[in-house]
Amino acid sequence: MRKTIVFNYKSLSDFGVYISGKGVFNAPERDTESIKIPGRNGELTVDNGRYNNLELTYPAFIIRDFKNNVQALRNFLLSQKGYVRLEDDYYPEEYRMARWDGAFKADPIEELYAANFDLTFSCYPQRFLKSGEQPIELTAGATINNGNYTTALPLIRAYGTGSFSIGGKAIQITTANTYTDIDCELQEAYKDTLATNCNGNIVLTNGEFPKLVPGDNVIVLDGITKLEIIPRWWIL
Image (cartoon, rainbow, N blue to C red; front, side):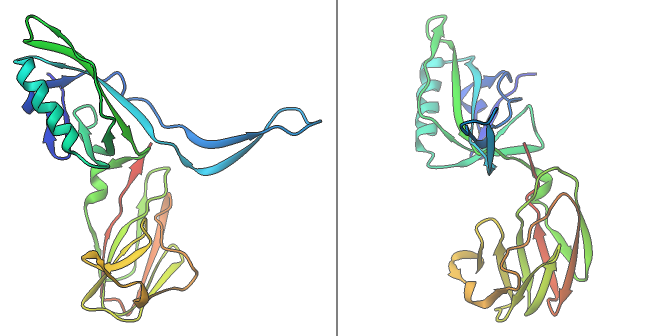
């Protein structure tokens, strides 16, 4: 079965593009610094608590009408701005956030009917799980288990005023127009869009936005009538 890429929700098979998976199993590099101290053997390592971007290269080929398809492919890729969603058939339950690096060299064969080339994307280190896009709805306290080794930064919709806590990290909502959206990655509160900033309506009781750490996360509601949590599970 031929495998392909879906980039910003468009399948590259529409351009006759299919891939092999030699590059999809690579892992990102942890961001560390090595420090050499005179008179001391070895090196100290400073961990910056993050991972670097991953360059992901797909060996690809066009199997029909190369001349027209490669022109359409190039125009589509160049029209994409910034990081967008990238999926491939090797990991159908996952997606990445990626940007196209903007160049490839094709090796056409058979009188411009087909060609081999590489498609290279610069990707965030996370491989997001599609299961982490499904909202978890709570109307009372509960425990959510993060079965991964990575800490997730959820998107939370909280209904009403009051407070809630996740793993001991509490947020008080002092004013709400029905509900408040809280993006724990962007560290912003708003309603529906970032343009409707609601940061002034929340209080972080311990100065931190909630996280879903590996293992059990105890959730407590006090006055909040409902939480909808999109966990954003991810792996490396």
